[in-house]
Length: 163
Image (cartoon, rainbow, N blue to C red; front, side, top):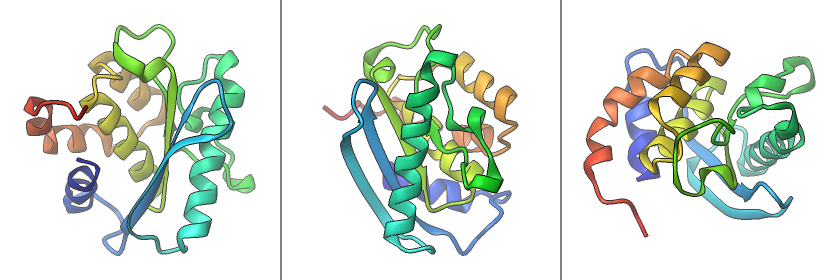
């Protein structure tokens, strides 16, 4: 499913960098600094090491700001220090079910909004974010890619969830 979401993101007319073709995703528990899952999809323009390091940094930073009520790494963005958006967790007040409150997902290798949109839509497909959460992310971050990607992936919500 992650490959399909990436392909649909890159196919959006408004996607800014058509040369992008890969992303590194990291997933970790909210109670641990150790990665739970690492996925490499395609080729990263900055090389896999840089993309992996940035994805991990986003997750770690979000974990550090969790007690401040942050649910995206974009809430602690600082471009001068190479601190970007692209990590998501289920907001504390969300009505979403499942394990979304227990894990953080981060991506790197696309444009900043692309990283964040990909994780947000995947979390929504897994039912770890609800529509209100996505609206909060768009309102907080101003990410113009989330809504079009959500529409492009609408049929993925009808598929059975992976087990």
